[in-house]
Length: 405
Ligand code: PLP
Image (cartoon, rainbow, N blue to C red; front, side):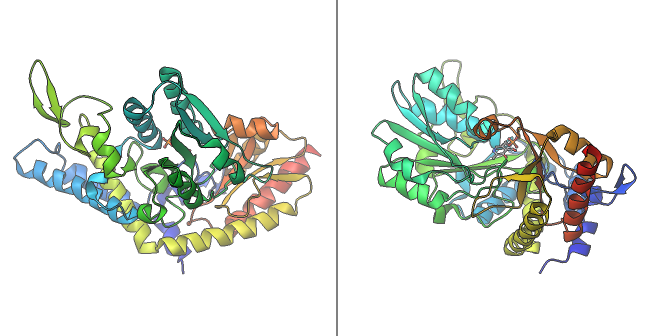
């Protein structure tokens, strides 16, 4: 069970008034708020410990290095990776995907090859593959989705052929909330020896992730969407691929031996972590994982599913409101439009009532094109949200409607 009263106190941002009203934060899909345990520990780190990692023999450098590598071990455990060396710290989901698109692309993709993505990808899991295909004269193939917002899985097997080098698909759609059957996708792909990258930006904070059980070849996510700082992210990759893939960037800390003629590189994960990495961000991610573990990811999932059900029923009672994304399996994300009212207007008026939602295309213009709309209003929930937050949203939407009538 979740102790909401205690949890809400842990998140200082939530305990303020905006536009004179108690703040209701429903933009968790964009970024999550940070618990005081993370904020304070990071401040303490800068006060007492800060020193660059992997380079010094002195006390604080050793301590920083240990804290950084401990964070790697926490991530490994959290997603049940087989080895610590399969965890690479990056700047975030976008950075992780670009790393794979470049490095995997250099090693395995040639002219005429094919990459498959779905039509519901965030631009971060579409544009890097378009760029790779342009660079290599390869072909990007698209797995479509239907009106409910579910992938047309029956079309997948036909899309895969001998030229397919990788499938990159989101675990959860950020604009529709759909939880995709990634385990099934991975199984189908592996039957034809095709590796799969899972974009976990919108799943890592909502459900238990076990990369060995999924059997995915790559899994990527951002720290800031799971209660850690911005500027830190993770790329999980199976060792067999990481060993073969060339470095993405060159620089300090990723080299074995350097001469003016030639450089040899360290093994993964270090060969992919050039320069001074965001070691404080990694520390914050480890702390955020501790926090999530203390609450319990199963408890989080249960509470958020209860919120989703309550909010869906409540919003569907509002005449003229259409929900985009009605898949059977969803996270607590509701994209909607009010008849004849622009999403920006709805969002701006809700803001005046102290309710934060996101409006626009949510970096998924292809999804908006599919529904022939320019954008939606998106309410995305986290485990610190309450049923009272849902009531405030519903009341707010009714007021928006009244203002336009
Ligand atoms: N993929 C999905 C599904 C997302 O929702 C997001 C961000 O909203 C991203 C990728 C990009 O994440 P970031 O901006 O943290 O790199």
